Image (tube, rainbow, N blue to C red; front, side, top):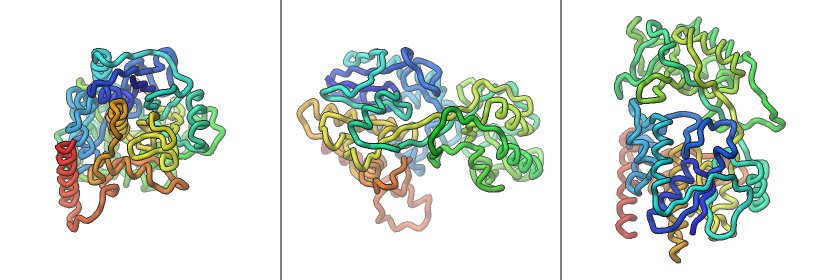
Length: 430
């Protein structure tokens, strides 16, 4: 029997993979007995920060990662495809439909038993710890005692969600960058004066510090919008507010800056402020974000929040199979391993689940080819310099070089084709 602790993306994917290989699984999820500062439901695989799972094209690292997972029978990617909402070239989902369907599939599997209670210690026997970035303090202390890993943390934040009906549609427009993917984003243009006033207010807005008595270290892929604004006058214009690829139909020109909103559900009644992760106080979020002309009357249905993430120093304690170096029967999966991102977390769960099942059957755990994104990500987090280790997203820079193609788009295409060919060959051998 396999014990999986944590019913998030990684834990659900791990449980599903192992169960499909004939292993009985007990999946522990502490919600709703105990909740976290970021979760709002008791559903499995609840998406917290965003409803986007990143790019879906093979020429994006995230798209390649998802395609690899599809070919490996991923539960999470299959459900994401079923609950997708329009988002241009990205794969975004109706987050409530997504978590509800994952919960139903897991509950219906004959080899998976779900137990709703917290686990405060690491059990004996075959186990996968997939407690995510919000591991309970008790279990985190147990893990630190086991691994000897200390002073490893970072903070990230979630973006606010607003009611679509509260938009001033006369002061924005629906469009995708460069006209790609349809009109899936609502764009809120700002002229120079509006942008500079907004940026100034953002920098000086009051932030929620909470009970933080340690230095803040943010993952670069999820830095709060106010932190980005403080880095320079034009940082936002070269980041989440970049106007490149957009033309305002009201003027016929590219805006000075633009805020994009993405649909949160299929009905499009809820919209997520793209890139607006924040730790501003809720009153300040209302005041400052309503300075965006199209959002002057915005109704906030969820404010942005910040939470503490916990991750291991994976190069010191994990193998590329996601096993703990000093105990064959103990696996870790998800963001606690140092992978960063929804799909990356689920991907690590997929590998951990497969390998735990192999071990349960008396076989050796395996690694995927380094040419694949799944294999390269596992190799990176377990072989990086442990002195400066930080969480890592999927990216083409992780893949082995040797591709002599100068055109960047074509090079990514070649790398993606090589990765999928390597995965197909690996699957045939297995």
